[in-house]
Image (cartoon, rainbow, N blue to C red; front, side, top):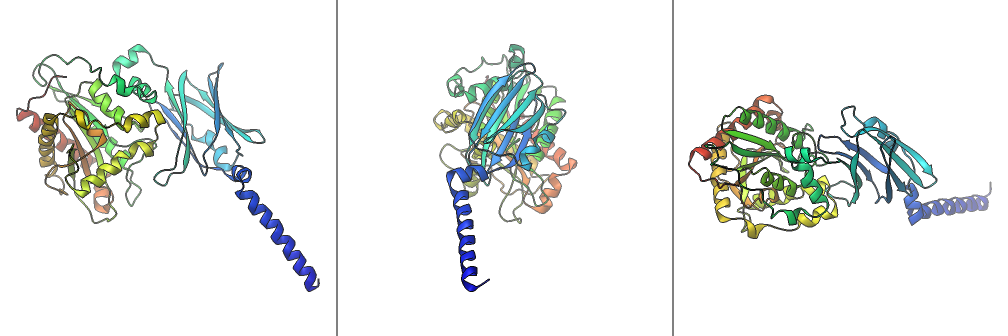
Length: 417
């Protein structure tokens, strides 16, 4: 081949590859070449969630079929890839709502996902923008169709429905009538245990892949078990399995169950693995008491963005309740926090020996003394190792319970709710 022929061949090659490149970055080419990079299914007793994470925002249509019950989601301008083909393998046998999942190329431009259901559901499908290293998401939440009896036993499903419809704020004023009698004397002291994060939101993680959401759930379950053995106490949990619950719904559930105290359980993380120790935080209505508290509150308040809420839920999250928080409640929260901090200090180094304050969204119940416990730094290798042990989880739950007892024994007046 002569030099001229070689030059012509090179030009044709560059022209061809250039055309392919232009196609790949054009809107049509981008849609055709984009793909789902991850599929996750989060089954729980409350609801099951299917998440499709993609390099671009996904356009979709949905509809229900009966005989048997099925939810169909059509993803437009998409092509099957190995990630999508594996969706059937993600369905667990113990999933309360999903029997099976199928996926196929419905037509040249549409991928169809079919979820076979074990029971009738109320589906909620929405998209989320990228956040915290997570790309675009298409979220499919499957809620059970409610019965009056289920709502009476646990108000969580009703609260989630209100939240998804943007109606939680309006119903917040409808506070249940107060429980009769004085807490701990005429009736049990009611404690709401709030294991942080869950489901799509893993929280912080350690060097050895320990996830905050798993550790704090174990501590929360230990605390519930200990409280159940106390004759004058009763415990509820915002979540008792691996499920994402929005921050405002956690607060609303505590109020609906007429809790006397609220304890949110977490495991801290920092950029330096040298940071260590346990901490306790309370709400501040006048700004954070330290830069560290301000940073922590900001990261904790982003939980809803990571866990994934619809726009109706975000609207409620953006509405602050600072003006509703009673001064006495914050005062009682500080006393409560000091009591818990004292007992935690007996089992672990304290990162700070006073209760810090910031605008934590999960502590904004206006009438319930509320604290957030950072059980240890999961980013610290030694503390990560301790957090993984049943012994430390039990010690932490016991320390929190001892703090509850001390606070209650101090004669603090718990308002009737």
